[in-house]
Length: 363
Ligand code: SF4
Image (cartoon, rainbow, N blue to C red; front, side, top):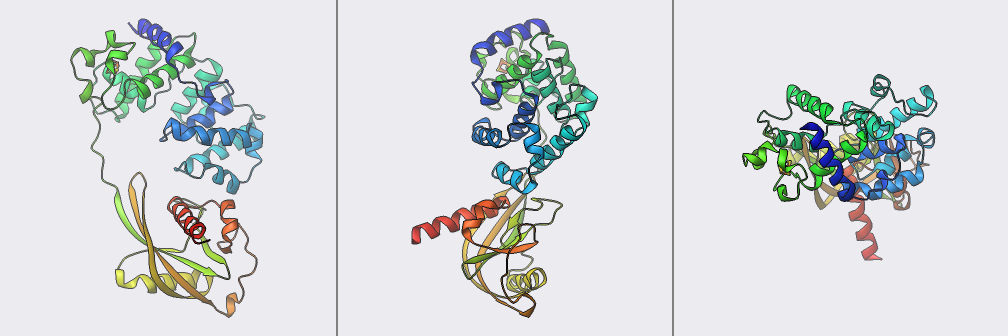
């Protein structure tokens, strides 16, 4: 049965595969980049980012030689920035330890930062024709339906069982196409809601379809609701420049720029919290102005609800002039023309768009 599933799937893939830029060659570096970008991001959203990335970083060495600041800018908008940081770390390791060639050995490739079991399987099968499974969410869904698996899908033993089934099904010829065909089936036919079973090349083998249980599978753990965090940010302009602060080098949105921001513990303490923060970070005395706009930004486990205010500062003796701003500093005064050179934390990028379009409408 497993061999027949593979045959039918590959036949279907030969005519149904979408024409995607990263499928045009078997360069392991490019496959690596595309797989990392595609994690938690839709294909349509990835397309322009991938194209821009490959134009700028056509090979591992070019990426390894680039600054993190610039690399984060090229990633900006894709979210989950740890992916970009790990990709850069991993590529640098490939260049320093493997002469710029992504290793084709399973243990070696999995020791590279940012390459887990799934990415290793994808690179090894697509670039090096190794019969290694690459089990992502699409594949878990397809197999949970094919075999009518009713256990909760994120459990390690269930994932392991499915990986084993995929391993048994994967052909030694065209293993990369087989993995991609499974992902394609999950993305375009065996979709999370309303799978198009009448278009499915493996319908004859699907136990969930036979039992009409496809809508119930896979069984997923109830998601916990994202915790809402209330924040206040302030837009401070001085002599045509704006005050920006760099987030800490560790943690969420590490090292990215934002307008000065504090968490709101009490509504009445917003101005005093911002004052204390700005005095400590940038040595300026602060006065709060009117509210400008609100933004909400959703992360996987939390939600930021940010109110943006106008603000003004007087610069004390310690920081008499705005001076020259270094892009590696902890804070700085930047002209709007310099903003495109900076990597803004997600919600603050939205604020930048808002401010720039308001500016354009005024002029
Ligand atoms: S028959 Fe339907 S549920 Fe079964 S694998 Fe195909 S699309 Fe998915």
